Image (cartoon, rainbow, N blue to C red; front, top):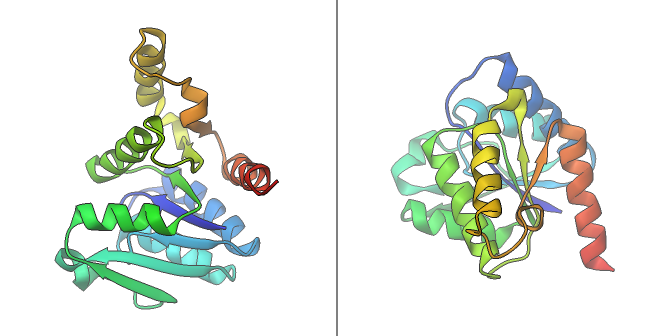
Length: 181
């Protein structure tokens, strides 16, 4: 399975890097491909290093603006003109999406894939790995949107919030098996 991961390009402490390393190791050990922003910086670099160390394949989708931060050990590196083109390429290349901790760019990527899924423009599973309750506020807001009629589909059809790496990957693999059946 080709799994797109959105996450921070900043260096973070162990509260966030340890869950990312665990997820990356599982992804690589199970023979999946990481499709990510193509950066060697921060959590993105940690993720790529650990997928590669566990035997997984790396497909980086970078952007000209950030070419100087490209991960040199990727199996494939695609360069896009801008961030919008990169987001589209990331989703196009992926069978599923996982969101780790991140800032505004990660939030932008998550809300875009949720909006596209809401409108039926893709059916790929989306998982938020909620390390240390980082996305509790977002989950609360999305739950309120659902309760007050702002979502045309149930929230659990749009996104799965996982508490750990193993449950995140188990959800994706089950979703992949269900779509193949």
